[in-house]
Length: 586
Image (cartoon, rainbow, N blue to C red; front, side, top):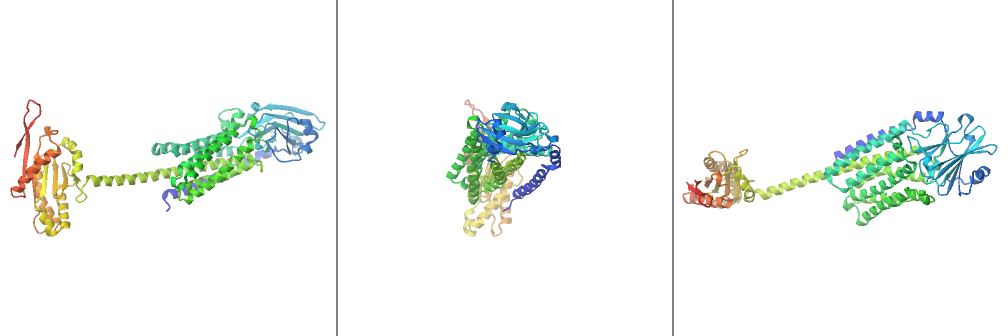
């Protein structure tokens, strides 16, 4: 069954997809191409890896030997990049080096002239300057002249393949900075994440469910990831290079782990076996602890932390689709939302993993797809939580309706709809305090004969008609109660209560005659009435009043039936005990 919320969701996603497609088309843009034409960048012509003993002179003398293996590796103590002068001309000599922000120990540049001269310039990690817009840092090269035939770059303890594969030389400062349209996409993604976070706060006030807090943690981690990994944080504050290099991958690992926890909590209990749920939670801890540790990029772990970081995500990329499909197969509606939300994220994450492992090279702007996928994921899950809230609200309303029905059954007579003795006894003290000081007991005369002669079905109709005569719609000063059988109680307040009670009693034969035409004899009633002074509120209980009024009712029946007897009680003196005595006046 397609609900209005589902239709709204798919319309929203359709519009969102169209908007993001337009934005992603704008990312390269004419402005970017124009900038590239004015200020081209130059990729390495040679990659090499080796030991700390290798020198610039070794690379310069035997470049062909060292570059014979073109595989890009970040697991060796030293990585070498060679930029051949044939890639630029005299008017476009490079002046700057830029690459993806990641950890390293030192970077040393050497401009190699045709006569073998080497002009060197070295930097440590703390010297790296992040470009204010984009996930890249920049360093100044030694002087490149018309005699320079190559620029050689030595990177000690590189912790990431993209540090090598995305390295470029350029003639202009901040050539690696992202364009305004690319930053606009980042800002849009960040803005799109704010609203789901506000939703989570609102949802938690209502639901108080742990999965809402876990989703809020996911949103916060995605926002932090966009800020650090996308380089947007540099627009607001200058942070150490090492901190920014660690923050992005660490936040991603934590966010992925929290996502696994969220899946285990959000999916319906019967949609996961206990073993599957435990495996999902274990996966969450694996993602936080193992890739999280590798994300710290200690120099002691440089030989393996980059590859192991990405390899550690492979179990998640294999397990989560299986868990989602299994939950959908078991009828989980939540898993359907998660499948819709996580499919773009899983695709973008797989692409990022392949790029991170060096299977191919691509510019860092391709990460935009990962940020957009994160925004789509968070928004869809927010809608899923919203639908869960509506579902819980519908279930709560249905439960309240059922509870009200049960309450009605417990406090109301099912035949006549009048409140029963149990309900009136519970409220009697409050009603006396509200001024209901007249207590009338009514009993239909010879009702057993009516049941015997006309049948119990007709008798029930007569009881319903009697109840209608005693309960006047909209009358706030009269309360009718059915005690059982053909016996009723009426509580009254206000002026002339005894006369009003007698009017109700006399209306019974007329009401029965109008509504139960099969009875060809008048159905009369006898009544006993007690009228109390207000100051006796706490002196007589319901049972006391009932016993006294019932005695009057019995006397009325003994006197010939179809009549009313009443007593008006008054306080006539106060004894030394301080408790008033009552006197009855008929």
